[in-house]
Image (cartoon, rainbow, N blue to C red):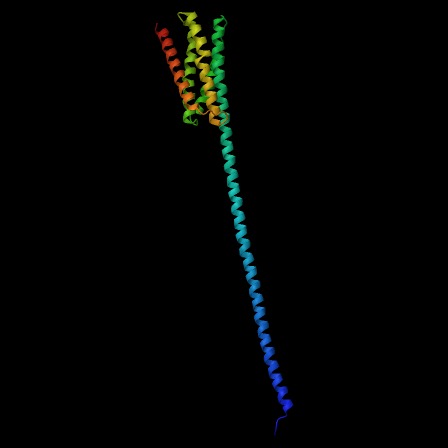
Length: 232
């Protein structure tokens, strides 16, 4: 029986429509999959990117905290050093002034209170003993030279009443306290300020070396004269 042409065309159109719908369905599935993949990739990428940024921010915060702590430790160390230097300078000056005033009082025939000089001596000795452990080498050289000079100064005061030649002894004491010892206290103050960066001189090292040598020389000469008087 012959086929109806219209029926055949309709059947073919249905087949073609089915095929197109199937292809369209596949396309939709692929598109949906692509969108899902992109979505998952975006989420994963965002998560990883956020984790990287968080780690970087955490690292920067830790580094900033470390720097702040280092700066605080440095400032604390600097303040401790400034406090020590201030006490060294103060006790050195007080020791010299106490010894000088004792000489002046004795020369005027006034009674000398030994407790004042002894207290000044003890205060300096305490600060110097602590400073020995922390002072830089160049500062310690100055402090040590001054410590030796202050020790002789104490002997000058104690030996005045028994001096065989009082006038000479008083003149010698005045010259010592107003000259070499005063220069030694000044040198300590300048050295401390130089080490702190407050007072910087380009030729300071040469000046420091020269003044230490002069102080040591004057101290040795005075010590020999005192020893000669004691043994006379």
